Amino acid sequence: MSAKRSLLACAGFVVATVAAAEDFKMPPEVTPQLRAACETDVRRLCIGQNPTVAKVKRCVALKYFQLGRKCQVELASLGFGGR
Image (cartoon, rainbow, N blue to C red):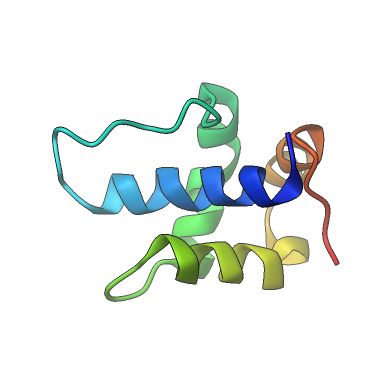
């Protein structure tokens, strides 16, 4: 999986958890492991008012080294590494 798709998946699951749309389907790249490893960190660091996938994606990339170790490892296993 490309780094871009991994990051987009991470951003997508977090935005989806913030948006209360019941019919929203998670991207297939969002594994339970990715969600468990990253959701708290991404919410803490990257979710503000009016989150969008693009905003969260950029934030995760910029703050990769501030994410918890488990989240970093899970993203790295999907092909994404910090700058």
